[in-house]
Image (tube, rainbow over all chains, first blue to last red):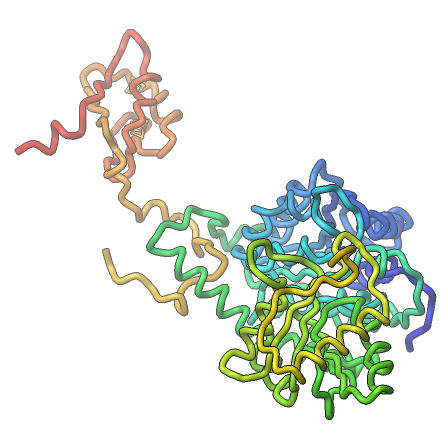
Length: 392
Length: 100
Ligand code: SF4
Ligand code: SF4
């Protein structure tokens, strides 16, 4: 039985974490993640969850403590945003290469500088090659559901990779929305016990953790990480399906909106997808066969699935909420264009919403019209179009 | 060296999957200096045995019994720790032993 209650994205994620019964949490506060850890700390203080909280002195320490705890055999999570994750940087790679199933809500916020506390995806996009699974959420419900699924995905023996749950700062983290919460017992059963094959606290089976990995070995260890990422899509899908049977909300790798006959398609991540659905409806009124492809996973990136989802499109626009300096378009654009390599469909880049700049239905509707026009004029390539920038 | 395993055969996560494996590894190539021990001078106080970071000082019946040169890295701590009045160690360039 699930009940509908009003929760912010942060509170929803905190409940999901509580219900997943982690052994250890190590975190340091940073806006807009702070309220998530407030809420979780309250659960610990009230005895509603039996988790050891490690209050560390920085995010570098948070991830280091999480690594130690996970290696010891404990189900472990941390949470952060933007500069907090930037301070974790070297430890992100160590968590992934040590194959530790740490779960981390990452509340998307623009990386300084100039200093800004609002949403964009520059923080998580910078960490795309750290070896973490990255799942994006559209709203509080997805933040809740994805956090629960993250433990199952991370801890699966074929995967054993850390998982980042990315949700938009303030837009999701601080906005109250109705969220259907599952019963504690139902989540506990779904997530299950964490029984790692190896743990440092198992003193009868000693092994060395974190030794020097010289040229004869390092390459092989990277190949193993690549293999885990290749196996992850099937697990992400299976867990999403199983979660659907439980909750009525099935999660796939991506979600299309009015894609059946869509010719002008936008690809986007996160909360903007909700706004884009409205825009699809608006421009469909004027005869544009618009559609939306919402991606859930950025890593692993579902190249074949994206290619098949976009196979009927006449033109594709990609919405990036971050930039890659020195090349046109953002990271999502480059992956989508790579997915369509060899085809003739034009893929055109848009950048929007940096540092929390608002994005509205009419602006996305306009992007659909621009794409439609570009397709009619036979545009194959152009520089990035900035949405909502003064004097763009 | 014997054939190294493929990535499919290796333990994941960069670990060394069992204990005691440093015993199997010959690190004698790390040495620049070799401790040469004089059993005549030695008073068997075993300070060097306590302090050697590689556990390379061998003992038998509570007495110094030579050096495990497969694991001695030539740091010279044993020579430093040996009582001043005893000075049972002389550190010699490893290259001197390779001549001829
Ligand atoms: S030189 Fe260093 S490693 Fe070698 S026996 Fe002496 S203390 Fe041990
Ligand atoms: S410290 Fe010197 S005297 Fe003592 S056991 Fe070692 S070599 Fe012998």
